[in-house]
Image 1 (cartoon, helix red, strand yellow):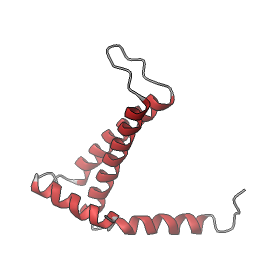
Image 2 (cartoon, one colour):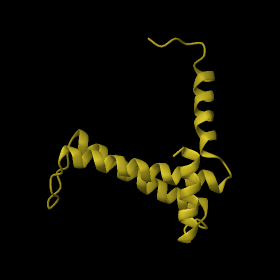
Image 3 (cartoon, one colour):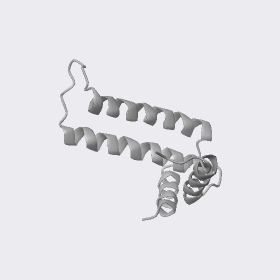
Image 4 (cartoon, helix red, strand yellow):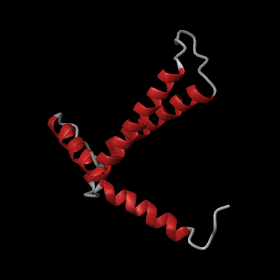
Length: 109
């Protein structure tokens, strides 16, 4: 599945559940919430969690949680992009173009 196909699938999924009609501000809030969950997942991997009552997860479970949370962030980016009629593949092109142009005169070490 391409990123554009996933974006189309995701929009359909959200529309059928009546989530797509929420404003970009609401989806931005969802994105912020998901980014916090990515932060928590990375913290668990890098320095662990010291939270009473929270069971220690295995390394595989921590990695799976990070993958899940990153996917949630990606989904919110794709929904917001769709709300502004931006195709997901255009995001990838824009990123490559910007970075290539910005660093065209510098050589990596």
